[in-house]
Image (cartoon, rainbow, N blue to C red; front, side, top):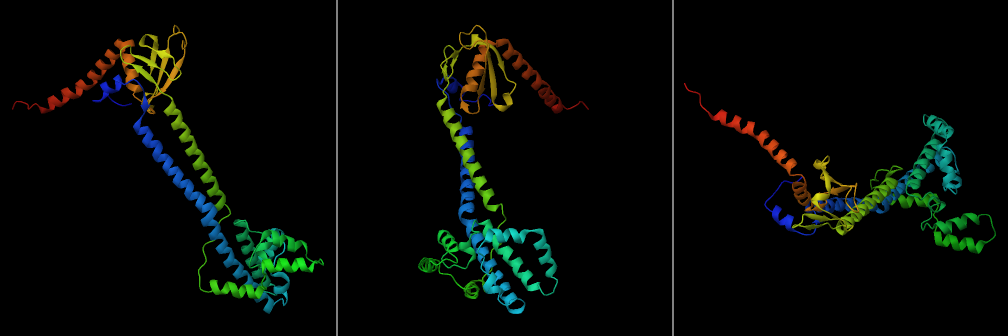
Length: 338
């Protein structure tokens, strides 16, 4: 709690409480930090991380096509044309993640007739994982379309094998597909000389979204708290030492049964009201003297009037506690006779 200062008399003669300046500064600083961190998290979740993840997916696609070309050339001719594009990426990623496929590919990496295919499938899994993290695990992004369009790609996949040649041609014109080798060549112009960013973890984007929600929610709570304190005004009558609550009820020193300071170190004080009070009889009213300025001084003045003996005892105890220290200091300065 604050100690009596030179402006105590001015505070006691004020007639309305205000927002305590240290508390207000603290709220402003915390709110600014939360808003800044929330904005940073929003930018990471919706701009930085998606861009980074998409860039990494482009590099992973280039790596995958390189492995597919190697497999087509040395082990399984035709695999590039038949299997490079992925029409059902969700199902394919699920297949690649099964324990049987993982164990088989890991075993085939050691050498043998399926080594190149295993390298291709591991690279394919890395690519599909990268697309999944940024929400692009869709045929529009796994069939080498230069202009990926989710709706157009979905329609094109649905028309496969149909006789609607004109519609299929229009969709192909919109999507502008490339062959696997052409796509690899296009990607090579970038990734042959550029270093890719690190891959995103699956929780990077969701965690930043959650962080932003929490920051803005807590900032909203602080704003609500500020408005609540701002609209709760206590009024003081310095002549009668009467405190009027925001609800309109008034408390005089004669109405106090006790001033409970069990949380005085936390800027909290409770006033217990006598049963004789017409509206607040028997209640215990909590005051936060850190949020509301001037209330502490008013309550101390009411306590002096209501419990003068208690104040005198406290002052005597404080004086007695200081006396030994003063006496000890004086005795230390005495020089013994030689």
